[in-house]
Length: 84
Image 1 (cartoon, rainbow, N blue to C red):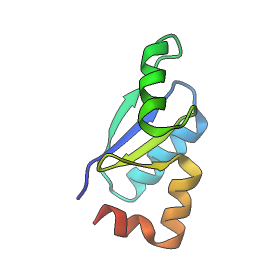
Image 2 (cartoon, rainbow, N blue to C red):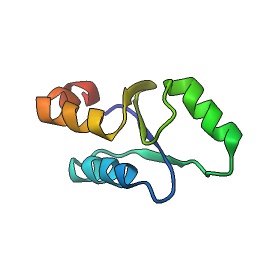
Image 3 (cartoon, rainbow, N blue to C red):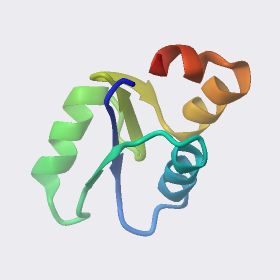
Image 4 (cartoon, rainbow, N blue to C red):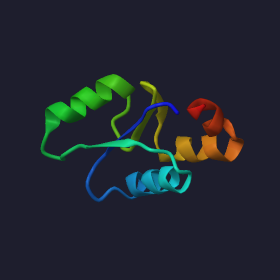
């Protein structure tokens, strides 16, 4: 299985949903918690993904987007293909 990393922030409901989806599917992932006060970490995450929001979900180093993107991949069956 490919490496999954999820960048999250405290009290983010979409982050919670993304993690729940991955857990429900049995997908192991690494969570990187971004602090609201750590501007440099946010800039680094934005540089990697091109996104200013969380969650930011990466599969084998490739950004697949946020929660709604992840849910769409699951619904279409593409998530299994990306994880294989």
